[in-house]
Image (cartoon, rainbow, N blue to C red):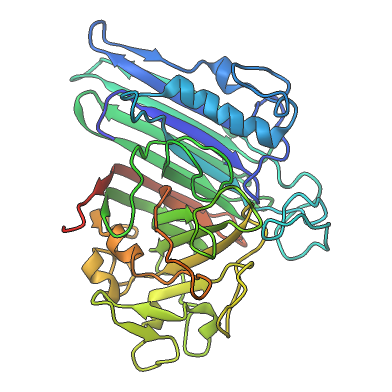
Length: 454
């Protein structure tokens, strides 16, 4: 994040990590702002044009396959690869493409039949389980881009650019945010000084009560967390448990209300229940997530009377297993919620399975809360740590912690390599019953690989 020549991408998703339908006149919901700062004439050389960003179904571009030309889901995938080729930086052996801004709409029209169940195509079913105002509720947003500009009015000069918009298609954000959804990410930096600072804002509305906004460090090739096709990102070398840390500075200015599952760090990957690496088969692949939630209003659903919401056991830093029925020692308040993959065959009762529709394949979630048990990894130890009014620079032993978390595997199978293809920070405002606003800044985000002996 310290390089002056920034690479940033944007991706919009519907409920099950697809596109479904493009927003009118917006093109496919993939965009980028990538440039090189020239010190010779003190100018920004942009690598992506606005015509590139507005590309949508039916419009060809170099490398686009015929099968994707008129398919919104496939078109977005191939557009991301195309934008990545324009943005690519670094050496030819290990190039990188961009930091990724991810925006997701949590509405699900169950009558549409658009989302598979644990990877399997299923027919429409009765509404009520998920938010949706009716036909069209899974729409993509209006997206506006303010390309990065360079101002030399003071000091070494400063750079600033942004993406913003709304899901409320009939609205004009220039008239204000009252009663409409809104998102914004502004990046800014002084030339030659410090880190890029990413300023985020996310607002829900009556029609869009479940929204997500993250800044992601994704794999430069292969599957990123939650997807079943080639993606692009900035992780040139994929971190593997336990040998990596993450450093970042986070300043939460507004929390987003009681339903805001704000993730200090969210890590995502994919492996099968038999321990094998994912290969794009949505029936057997499983997305694995672990998320540290720092909003002090989020309670622990895991409890002695809610064992189905707890992982079967907890592993301490000295590798001691504590089973969830050990009520004297299990750290229940360290876990918001654990849910098992819906395609697992040999789950230990009692159990809760994860939402089967919100990813293209089955998923598994381990959601953590601040607790003294995480102190050795540098994670928050008490409610309120890192929250509004407590801006901090964190150095998190993400690798060490992720090596000890419980993830399901079929009995007797080879232990999966825990290689993480996505690391992100941001919030998921989970079905708010009123308009909520979250606002935060993120800077100095760095993934640090460590040696096995460190």
